[in-house]
Length: 429
Ligand code: LLP
Image 1 (cartoon, rainbow, N blue to C red):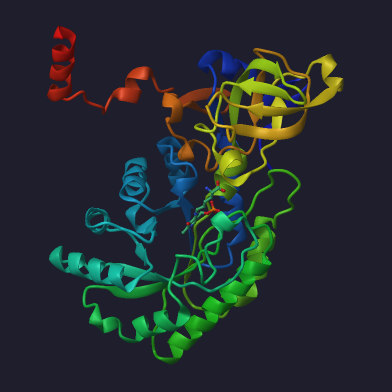
Image 2: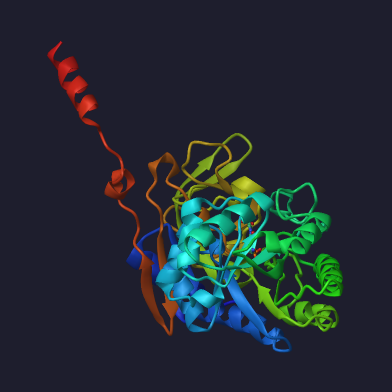
């Protein structure tokens, strides 16, 4: 399932001892396995062999340009949600006819950039946005393809923050409204309505909500067909869950098999937008133990990574398995601890009341399943330089993002002339 495991007493990524990476690049550092990344992509790709399809990797999960490039080299496309992600996709060499652009709030500049990049599809979610794309496309003499994102009103049974396909969520257009838009599509002279898009949420472990949503979308497409409206692309979004703890998510093959009877009914290309499925278990975050602190009825393991590096536990109360890089004999025994970072917030934790083998200062821990929504959601909070990122491939490790420096933190900031002057004046007083 992934390429991180103990070999004897040491924790490895593929055939590289992670301790060597921690020594060479310092901590906190994200480490990714090339093999896991490509395996996950290929697994999904092969599972959908039975239908013409494009896998558009959801760049938000892990947007490092090296990761985008290695997936593009396998033939993978990209799902982007901002001009910045589109820029990364283009720079990474993702083919423009494999790029789809989602999101409820695209700006004029972003739309222009996407039009000039000749992307495959705009996944659009409101009439106001359709009007804007239509207007800008006219000015640029373009005729982009549109995939309307419909809201199938299906409960994905995942964390409330990452449920997106219920009618009370901000995403998508109701089936009734979408039907009206398709019926009056020639109002938008510069748009080609060619696709239907759904994305019901993230970290979905059962196929049942997908089946429900895909069924609604297929019925909708059949209704359009009766009106003589032909759909060429059916985008079923991302959201496939992974194992963080004790989940048992559907395998790619099971997922593909469960949709096969429904997809047989339609005559169009399928698009998938997986993010976490590809990168989630392909990355770990290495962090060093700084101190052990005993409080009245708790023991804290204070590490050098923090919520600014990996916010998922703080934000979603998400579980990440945490393992020491080196097993010692003492580790036959364990204790219950909180694993926390140095940021000044009580919400800065990676695990609470977790059983962990005895660890001491300078030991390095691996926070598992950190390849998706890890670095990409990191920040400089508390003025902490962001972590380094390393890729392991064929027994070698490659730095794919340098650790930030203090200079990086203030690079774009400016002490304006007026403040410099007032400082001098105060000194004179
Ligand atoms: N397509 C669309 C339109 C999306 O909004 C998303 C994710 C994806 C595809 C990819 O979903 P995935 O396959 O990775 O589940 N930060 C949260 C996850 C937010 C997901 C947002 N949208 C987390 O750390 O769990």
